[in-house]
Each structure stands twice: as C-alpha cells, then as structure tokens.
Image 1 (cartoon, one colour):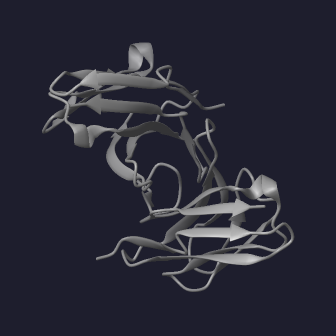
Image 2 (tube, chains in turn orange, green; image 1 turned 30 degrees about the vertical axis):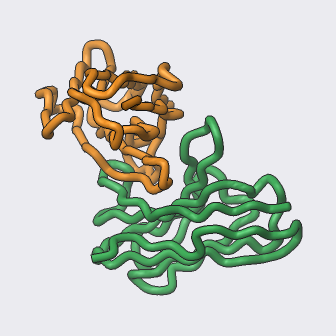
Length: 115
Length: 114
C-alpha cells in the first residue's frame, strides 16, 4: 500500500532563512508520480510540482527546489530565502498506483515564516 | 479562466438536513473528484468521475451521492447530514483520469453539521 510520511508537523523560521520540508514515501510500484501542494491560510490547494519516478534530476523554480532521491524514497522541498507569503501548510502526495484515481497525501507540514 | 470553482464557501447544517455542494471547472478537464479534508488526516477521496457520464466510489463514499451533470459540473450531495461529515470539501479536476495526472483543486467548502 502507498504511504506518504511528512514527519515535520510544524516548522517556524525567520524570514530569509532557508527551510527544507521532508517527504518520505512508500510504494511497490516501479513507476509512480509525486506531487507537492501548498495550502495557504485562505484554504485553497495550490499545485507546485509533479515528478515521475524516472526523473531524478533536482528541480528549481525560483526560490523553490526539490530533491528527489529514489535510494531513500524521499522527495524533499526546499524554500530558499523564505518570505512571509510562504507561510502555509505543504502537502506531499503520491499517486496511488496503476488504475487508481486517488492521491495518497501526507498529513502536511505547517510552515510559519516570522518577519 | 476561473479554474475550479465551488459553492458555497461555507455552510452550517443541522443533523438530518440535506444539501448539495456544487463544483464546476472551465479547463475542459475530463476527470473530476471530490475529497474531504479532516484535521490531521490529509485528504481522502469520496467519489470521482473519470469522464462525463461515469462516477465511482472512492475511499469514503458512505453518506454521499454525486452527479456528473456535464463535462464541466460535478456535484456532491449529502442526503441526511451527520456531525461526522463536518469537514472541508474539495473538488478537483484533471485532464486525464487517474492519480498520475495533476489534479487541480477548488477553493473548498467548509461544512459544519450540528
């Protein structure tokens, strides 16, 4: 069965600090997809990234970067020079296997960026 | 391009009342989904519609019904609301069916059942 673990329940950082959000997953599939979503205080879920299991290259998008390591089943998310607008709950998710329609979500990490 | 829209944003019901949550998407996506989000439990799939004219149960379908009215609209109905259905409900859509495709979410409906 698929499982996503986000061990950090809450993190607080001071503005401009770098922060890494951890995501560890379990799956028996050889082909799978991983996602990160952001849920700001307003409540909507905002898609950040989708990565397939065959692409282990790190990805950078502005201040955001993702480190995918199949050897440790991790897909960590780093925010560089954090800003107050980064304050949100961040969810890591995994596709639930071939033929499934449900994403398997982690329980989320609440990030608070203090000015 | 509004993306995925949901109405209402907030709703309070009494136990036993019924209501329908509305969802619409303007991205010409084929698949649509309803999730519920409970504190500390992430999101769980209630029902999904892989394509227009089809609907299927997800992980937690009991107490709910759905209608895929057309390609754009997917509604969720609570026939007899219970306090256990107090939750935030999210509608999502994706281009193709299946959890490997990116799902885009609406803003959510916060439902309280007293």
